[in-house]
Length: 512
Image (cartoon, rainbow, N blue to C red; front, side, top):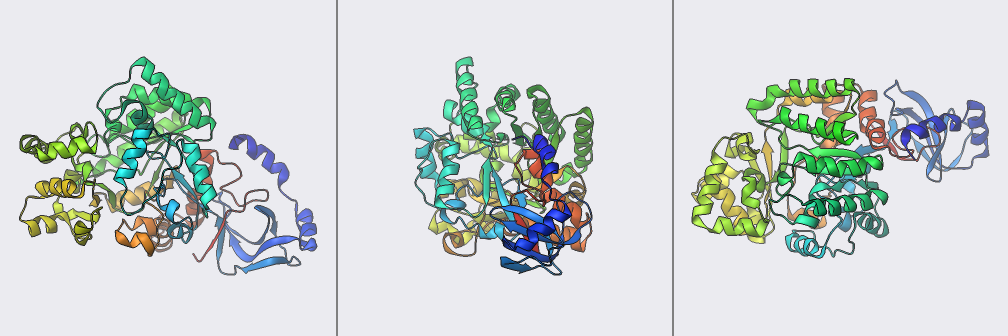
């Protein structure tokens, strides 16, 4: 059910105080949260009230002194809020091996949203083969084909949180066109539309893209608009790691706004940022562009993580043409001296044609290596690119190519490239929610084999601790709204995002 329709019904479901008191006398509650300070997700000032839960629903809120329950939680001096929503989760694989999702549950996250360009379906046989070949520390069988089947697979295995996903524009493109720099024929575009239609009917949230990476980079704006038009018929959304977050950041925002306008659907910017020192001043223009589009009536929003460093593979330092045909084609190019030299020159040369994270970072000592597939390279985890280059007596760009070739992977890295002042400016925007852009991990088991960006453990806690409590960039009621009702409303989630009677009992209790 659409959320805007549901809210009209919700008003008739709120229990008046007399009804709440009557329900309380029955003592027929499963959980009673007593004496907490309730932040309901609206952004309004909190109230000191009790919250009663029966089954999976909130059934009473108010003064429930006479109530009893099988489980009573003493929430005095604690904040009680709707469960937090992670707008950008990469727990697609981590949940398979550990459905508890400790790294996120312990931050108050109760809902994970996946699908940044790549989704876990639809898959064909070649994509499944490549996925298995590319697996790193986490090993699993692929027992599904569609995105909907993957989500059911997670549910069957058991997960502690709610999960939902966009269908990846990259995934749909690879299903039909492979990893080549080609454009779809009219017939191929029809197949791509049909794949989107099936996933939307099965419950996908919309279209997700990640346009700095090959093969997504090869898609033209018109292709994305056509896929989004299908999603729009099902009240879907568009969400994008835009084509450029650096030298051509405003142009990338304009593309996203165009897709929203022409396809007729809401659009969200993934992990809003201005990457590279020279691009930091562009954030003012980006914010103005979004605000202008919103005044026009377009539903443009954004999410972000709360750190000045991003994380992706070393592949993000290479020109997109080098990955034409996929990683095996890249590795062959890296083994050919002449092509390798051409790639190295492209990495070193300033350009606006593609986004180069090596240049965004500004220096090889601002690139931290955190994830390798092969055991022999894992001791390099935690070292900077500059340190490894010095150890090997090689140029940093040559070292990037060597490491990818030796590891036969993208090699995960952290890039320091954003401004702390921009982070605060973004947090102040009322249309910005939050996403970790990481997997949900735990300091145990398979997760100890590699390192990761700290956002996997701290993105939401850092917002509440550093930017709310310590630096007072926004208030706690407003922070709770951005973590709960804002993303829930943007996504159209049913009965989630607010702490009200009749809503699902996704509740977090924390010490502010």
